Length: 283
Image 1 (cartoon, helix red, strand yellow):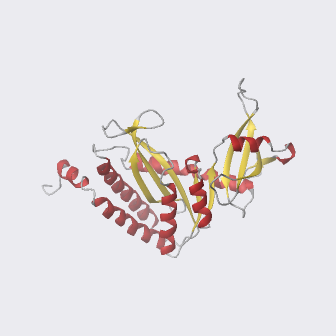
Image 2 (cartoon, rainbow, N blue to C red):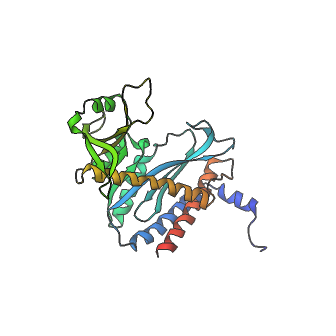
């Protein structure tokens, strides 16, 4: 017991920022083993940002109105493995760094002779850089679309006959309808499809002209039909469970240091512990 380092020694260790690269390399080495022995291919990447609420002096106010650190995490949904983590301050936009994590994961899997086929995300990734990166690398994306003025105009132009009933996997009516529109952005190199879902608004708003609520998904998936794409995209909600597991199950909802870089190293150790647990479960 006398040889176990105390809090002061651990505190000094995580403040040495050069150690972060070493822990990330260790994580990468572990992921190679897990992926190599999985027998899987055509992977799906789920990316989502999570907030770590804190009152540390270096933390910044986020869009929800409290001081926090923000971590962008990417997981291979097929294996539950975390392949990327980017620890930054709370004021960072949730989607910042998404393109980099897609490109890193794609290159990483290709180095192993594997393929990143799908990318899923919420609206934080709805930007031209992500669309262009996926299209250029032949990655199929499904991303929750922002309902900006252009998208709303496209929805208004959908004819009544274009709407179809949406059924679930068991052929049960979901109470929703769907339609498709072709869309592009100023900086996107290729147009893409927006799948629009609508359902009757249970609470009509005096200031809204529509009696429907809408949910939109941007995609370049031309292999599958819209209902299958919708069901596939809905499964991205599991990324929030991954975040909760790392934060609550491994204690990473705590920031031990007043230094951002030290907290980043501490969190990366948590990611390593999480991935090691996944390896034990699978292997």
